[in-house]
Length: 215
Image 1: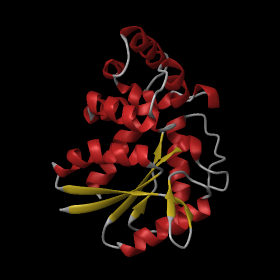
Image 2 (image 1 turned 30 degrees about the vertical axis):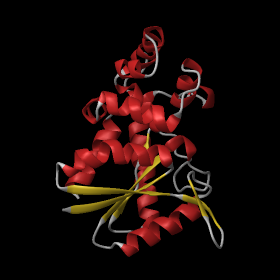
Image 3 (image 1 turned 45 degrees about the horizontal axis):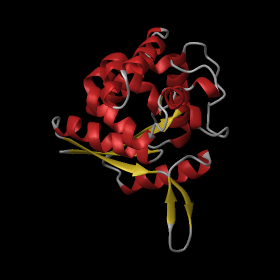
């Protein structure tokens, strides 16, 4: 069995990895393990979730990769949430898929870790939830599901959904679904739609899955 460590942003991503990626990859004889980015350390305690700076993330990712030199290490971070000191983050290529590929390549070159490949979620985790609007029926009514369908239909792929801070996927869902809980509801919806729907609808996510399998 091949081991893969996924260094991720927080408990939302950890839940998604455990509930959807783990069973998917287990069937391929691949074991995936989420490692949450730590935001703060004290003598007796550490806090997890979020990205405070690229340098802190680089140190932890380097430590993880060098501790497991014969295993594959990758990441699951929201593109929207990356700090300004991230290598290549100022890239303004108009084609979002080319831009993200270029930024990831720049980060990988800066990291210089042979067993590590950096990966972004476009534009954030909640984007992939638009892959199958009907899956939201598990947590909301048909009228809201229709609004989610309209949003999805107005973009080429779920990974394109984002224009401004206020129109990011998570903000749209929070406005449509009062009390929307990112960890619980996000995992419920993702589980209801299934990973195959996400792979089919989201090209950058699909490429990441293929890269993990091929390593």
